[in-house]
Image 1 (tube, rainbow, N blue to C red):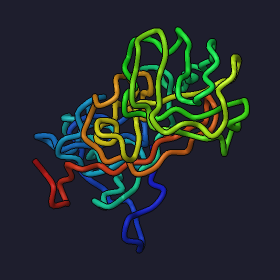
Image 2: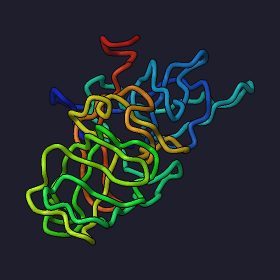
Image 3: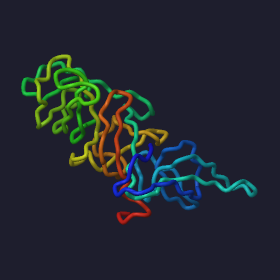
Length: 232
């Protein structure tokens, strides 16, 4: 994860904080701990300070250097995480290959939609009449049928033909459940795009880069921030 912008402009920089646990990976969400900041879990970002810019080693041995880590700590910081198709980082997103033609442009059929509901997430065209790669059309998913299909309410501009390919993710910037949570991968530095929409740690989805199976990204703000007004 990395900072890509801020809501209100101005300079952003990384401030050093005392750590209460070792940070072995940069670009992860840091939260408040009893002895200093600690890495978040994959599903809990409560009492966050932001995203780390480096790593740090924690020690309780007298004579060791004090453990510090640098954090991009602006409450309005917009962070970007690579989408991973599983709990492990750098897993390719699952490609959906449509098996039943949809003249209405609203249904994508493929058993590979799996069982993790993507309702309120987003599906986007990877190939076919609705575009492919960067710039392919995208729609909010309204209905999810496990291992069968996904349905959108706003039709794609063109018919969905057999063989057209798509990608999907559990987030959207306007979906009721898909705009308020995010789950990190096991090393905490990417976003797990294979989980049920609406599960994970509290965030605000700001935007997405809907590209290919290994380079699509989600952008978000941390809501429960120690320097903000929305801590809970």
